[in-house]
Image (cartoon, rainbow, N blue to C red; front, side):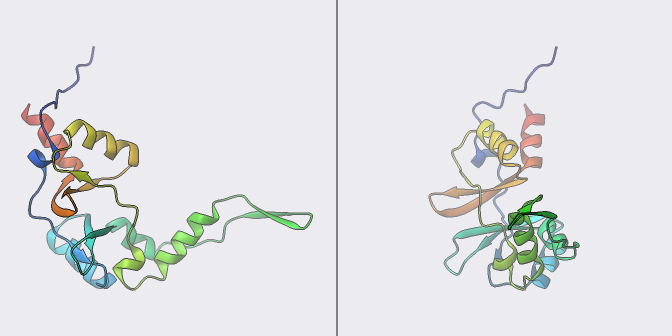
Length: 158
């Protein structure tokens, strides 16, 4: 019989890292690679000139630049073309491959949490949205970041 770990009472603010490494949306790919390498992290929130979180940039985004891009397979039927693979994924990979600035590479559909969100909700969001890190906000202001490792550390302290 497995037992679950009770994280009730803990919030994102309790387990978040307060010193958040960020990058500006107008930084270059080289800047991003150097920042990730220097801090030994795999991703960072992207902020605009007004310090608002506008994206997430990761090692995976950088690696995708060098990935082979293949036009989606298709079949022609009568006067139509039927794609057998996602054209949207192809467009996304092509956009990232041509990126020079972080804003052209980053993921813009950012999943965030407020600092008073329960850790159970944080873990659920990470699982459901398949993300490794969540920027933590106080209103619209970035105040921290929670990674999967932070959730695991919280579980080990209980």
